Image 1 (cartoon, rainbow, N blue to C red):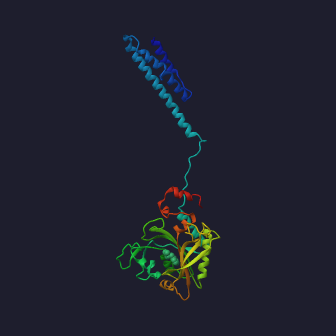
Image 2 (image 1 turned 90 degrees about the horizontal axis):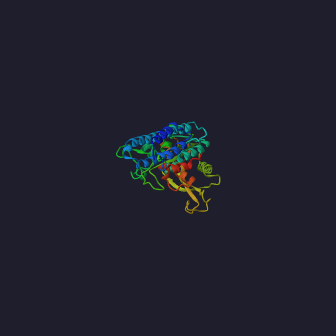
Image 3 (image 1 turned 135 degrees about the vertical axis):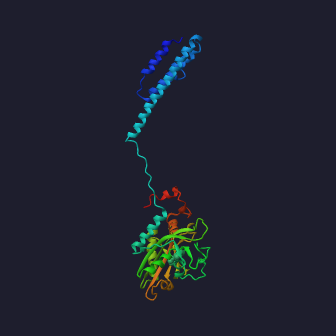
Length: 343
Ligand code: PHE
């Protein structure tokens, strides 16, 4: 039968109890308050004691239970402090990873193209993205009725104005600005963002990036153009790379050509990237039309030059076999992280 001294003894034990570790606290809890714990058992016995004793014993028992719970709680808290302190001072814990950012693949290819041409003696020239008609079209020998001047192809800012303001559709505008400013010899590469009014798909975007190049001096010939492009593609895609030139048309060059490289995936045998042809188109180029030189104040009898232009996204797609242009604009970190190891 329950006696007063049983309860007092337990009060005493709880008071004197000390714990060396968190497990001791848990052991105490089970011993006192668990299903078969000593205090739990006293509560069971309480149901059978004489009614006149219930009031006194009930009060004591409740106090005992509260005391046990408080003791356990405060001991637990004292250990929680230690656990926390330990993590602060544990110098053997592995450090947190510091995530490094990556350069965007378009920036990587842009830098590589500029680096190659800088070794050939080309300087970098930049110009405005918002341009006038003169620098994008008229100075480049575009006839007034040329379809590129149509709103379907070009984003105009003030289509009604006498001198239309527009978003440049190519960085050839920077070549014009360079020729206006500088006397030959001129050797520049012009990187930058360009804009065309096109529906967005895997192969086209209304914003993309170009690097265009211009070389003007006495006696610059088509052979110089061919050699410069060959050297460039072999630096970019490997020394085994071959080029092929197909006749083409641009208002600002004559003769004009479209340049293909031998497919770097199948080595020219034919695959689904090159659609079985063994060749991949990478740029437009040609000899600067004398009208263009004259429009910028350069004597076309004394000087000749070549120009070329390529899309950075296109070069990057071929280099890394990316099959959808949109990846370059979505900034999905899973895609961008793939370039983490590229220098
Ligand atoms: N400007 C042309 C384009 O945007 C590329 C080009 C540049 C072609 C220079 C020939 C010479 O497509």
